[in-house]
Amino acid sequence: MTIQQEIAQDPRVALYRLFDDADHLLYVGITVNPDARFAEHARTKPCWPDVATRAVAWCDNRGIAVAAEAAAIKSEQPVHNDRGKLGLGRGVHQHHPLAYRPPAQVRELLMARAERDGCAVSAVISEALRRYLSPPPPGPR
Image 1 (tube, rainbow, N blue to C red):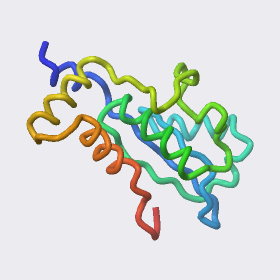
Image 2 (image 1 turned 90 degrees about the vertical axis):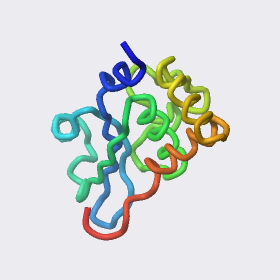
Image 3 (image 1 turned 120 degrees about the horizontal axis):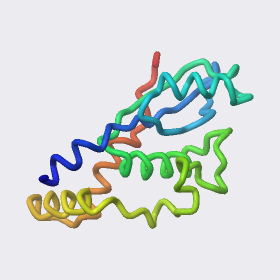
Image 4 (image 1 turned 60 degrees about the vertical axis):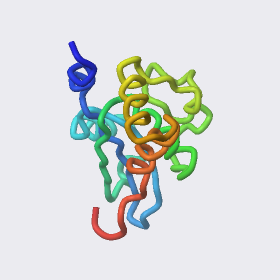
């Protein structure tokens, strides 16, 4: 199996932001199924009635989504994320976002892209994160 085939099996992951009616950021999270996740939040999160709008951006894989989520929580400081755990997804709370190590096939793809573009791997990662962390444009969500 090629690297591209292995990565294609890793489903896209949604990075979502929840806002109140005054456009304050309430929560940032990731999921492969936003509708199911929002339904779960409606059942379990006391802050759910305050949610007025939602913004969803799709990441190419879970590794990028986890890093983007952690960076968004750290920089945007949503009201209801646990910043002590940096709001990382289930099973990865113990990892610091800057220490995140993507799966081998993703690392190989990043290194190939960096070599092709004649830049450092960190530049490739920074550009990918910049795309996913850009705040949503103003206006209706």
